[in-house]
Amino acid sequence: MTDDLDRVRGLMYGLAYGDALAAPTEFIRDLPEIRRRFPPAGPTTLHQGRVTDDTQMALAVARALLATPQLTAGAAVEPLRQEFVTWLHDPDNNRAPGMTCLTACRRLEAGGPWTRASVTESKGCGANMRVQPAGVLPDADARAGYAQLQAALTHGHPTALAAAELTAEAIWLLLGGMAPAALTDALIAHARAQRTTYRAEWLGELWQVAGARSPETFIQFGWDECLAVLERLRAALDTPPAPDTDVCDLTGEGWIAEEALASGLLCFLLTPEEPLEALRRAAVTRGDSDSLGCLAGSFAGAHLGLGAFPPEWAQQIEYRDELAACADALTRRFA
Image (tube, rainbow, N blue to C red; front, side, top):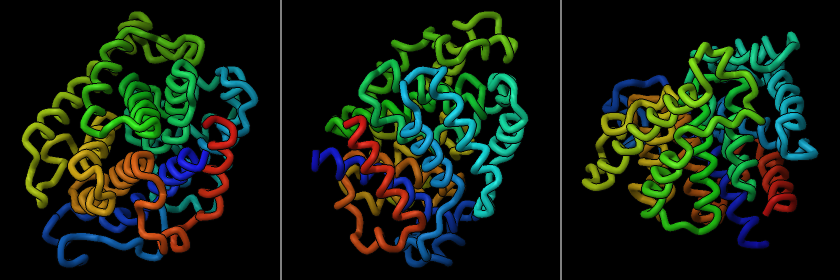
């Protein structure tokens, strides 16, 4: 239990640490400028610990998951809807939230079937930078279904769904002790195995709302896009880049779901035993640095546990009490 708790705490705090460390560079596109502002090689501190909507929404997912009495779509939708609408009106929701999330949350608040609220043309990274709490679920079908559902309430594009499931699967494998070197191949195998699996019990009529020919062709498109970027990830790892290389040159800028997954993974997998270097690398990019940092930090934390990060960060990070409470509750219920 102690090891489980340390890893889940590492997961939750790690996503917030990566978010806070990389947030100041999110809208700086010039790498020399990033290094000039944060000498010598980019951010290495939490900058007062202030996080973005990435951490806020990951906590919303964690609270919704803990409030779900049974892991079924019927039981899971309303807690997610309530948490997302609460976030929509939170006065601290002033951290440059994504338009897709705002639009979908307003539709969710208006009522009606959640499938009609989803922005089915969007595969923005907002679908998978918040899914990490689902990675603790031990049942494979529930883990995949919940990961896709929490994504689909706002981002209904099939690639957003597949990338969210892959992010949760990566977390599960790392929490279970998988060696980082084996992770990419495991995720590729998972994507191939799930390529035509439409989880109707969780997604309902979403494929029809999106105008697809069939549920299988709908979801296959998303898995194929994820497989393509995972192959780019594997190629980047086969010939590791120099420390000053922008990962966005290799696996994408991270504004969209599959690239956020691959680039966040690349930041982690290049130095899996050095979490601070993984976070620094996420920050020194021209892309969506806070989301890449959030993902890289969650992977590092799930792999190494909370003790791998500087101990003083736990007192500096925003939402620290809730991060601890959610980690402890997730561990008690699911580990």
